[in-house]
Image 1: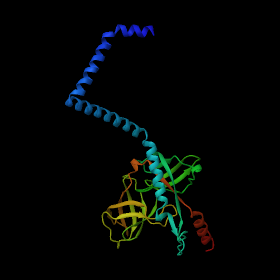
Image 2: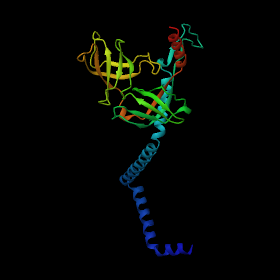
Image 3: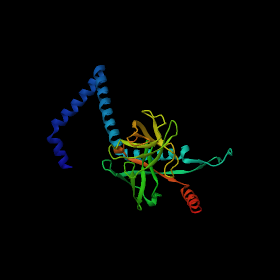
Image 4: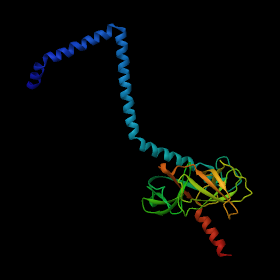
Length: 277
């Protein structure tokens, strides 16, 4: 306490100056309209800048949780799409709809490793066996197909990217339902190749390509991309088209893993059909 008094006594004139200066400013602001308006405006500007900086800082640190929340919401929306259900009955009841039975469900996941510049590209997800992920499940976003789950550990899974030489996806032209096969020739990560479109089919630049719905891995109507070029190569009897992918694989963050709830039933049925032939 003695030191505090000594400090105040030593700087007595300085504190007196601050006090008088403050009183003078307050009197000036109170009695002069222009100065009062200027002071209030300046104070509001400084306060607004401070609040804005604080909000930006909070937003930056909350980006991760926001992205995860959006991914979860997107997964919920996918659960409600028509492609996630299989039509099983013609009877529709008021309180219990038996017309549609869920065929696909989705698990949200984050990409923790990704490549786009190799001949055979892979991704790694932060979800694994304990989250319900299994091999041969599809991986998608709202913009398109990403790949197929290859290997699964307890907490992680590896995915064969669409940008892989072994990837062959059944697709169709949205405008006329003609089927084709999607492959990647290893050149540009923003493009892939559509094969086996018959020559009598009318193709146009900009035609949309989607999943066929015949796969056990992917629902139908999932966006792939649009035709940017096409030709009949020498020695071929079909069109080969270049597809500009709707999804930019170099910017991927969150994905949805697709689970076919009827896959075991389909596998068992078709296995029995082949063994009885």
